[in-house]
Image (cartoon, rainbow over all chains, first blue to last red; front, side, top):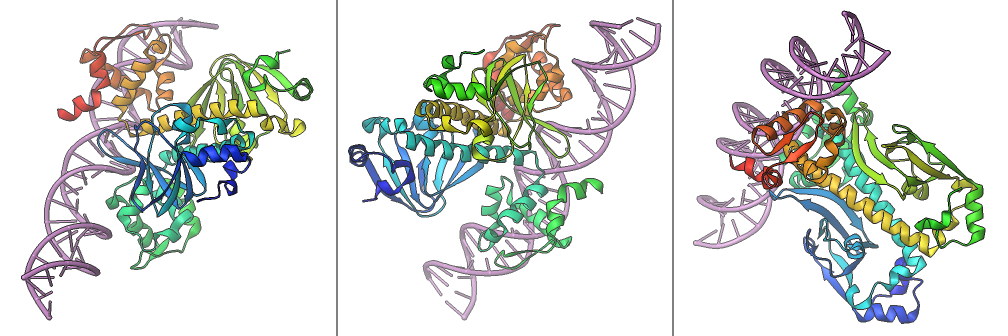
Length: 217
Length: 217
DNA sequence: CGGTCTCTTGATTGTTGTCAAAGGCGGTGG
DNA sequence: CCACCGCCTTTGACAACAATCAAGAGACCG
């Protein structure tokens, strides 16, 4: 069994409270690609992501996915829906193998929300979530080239051994568009890419200012 | 002086604590259009919006504004930046006359964050903020027609006595586009608009399903 | 009555998604 | 070992959407 006491969120709960949580919790292993919860489902559990990473995305009525955010362990999942009594606003899919604790808060009650320490940790987690959402909105003004450039600068390393199709999903664009942009960057000498999609950044500044550069042409 | 005790956030602080806050707070009146804080500024105050409404928007490098969210009294403003030590992620502009309390938290310290009641209220406020941001992301998949239809259904009343230029800003589209969409809706018999921009909804369902209807054509 | 602002409409452009075709690569099974 | 299948990538042609630019009409105000 996991040592709840070692998790920041729960570290200041008393033993009785921890017992209650343990009694109504299930500890589960997920594989990459498994769905933790679907958008528009009614929340039933509070999830604690103990290890691994989970991707959050929205799906629109035409079935198109829009990638929103990645949550890394250790953090809460589905807490906004659970605690504010709305349907899950996004779908949560495991990006890696994950260990997740599912707390049936209908049985336990939400007493841990009253714990000052839990509440403070929750606030921290929510701040992160908000800043990340604002960042998504930021990205929505960017042209595809700028979005790709920003992504390369931040996580170019992660291109290695990933397909463009995968990467294009996180960038919320089509693989065709990504391919075209990367080829353009290559041609203009900003980057090099090898067969394993390993990226080498040649002209960092050009990538950083791609928006301005192109506007002047 | 405002009765801090009557504000949910502060209602459970003790008298000593309230005294400290009062000592380092300024109570200020703002007019419509006044800026409370600018995006990318360093946060100095925690703002409590006591009356009125404030619009949050982002400005990109080309000077284009992107409307994000409206905050109505009574709520906190700038708390994410203040408490997580990052620059303001958005600009806050008064949409109406406002009364705002500015707390110099560098002088007071952030002791109120440790108050369980304050913390719980803060969490509620953050949930709302998150759901509203997710809604912005939702809107970003919609075509302009769908966005206009959704807006009419939700706040059609507020068209009265507002210019299309104003409304188009909140919809993150140009006035030309808004004009064209509204005229199309009028021609198709979905709505009526009079000279004061008062909207009458004729075919609610058509507006609700405009996305699907158009896709079938 | 001149000036400013809003609204409308048309023409044009830029950006990105869609569709289609072809080549490459790896894995599978006969 | 090879034929075949499926997926990924690239490229071109095209379409859809909304922004931009431009011009004119109408409203309001000093």
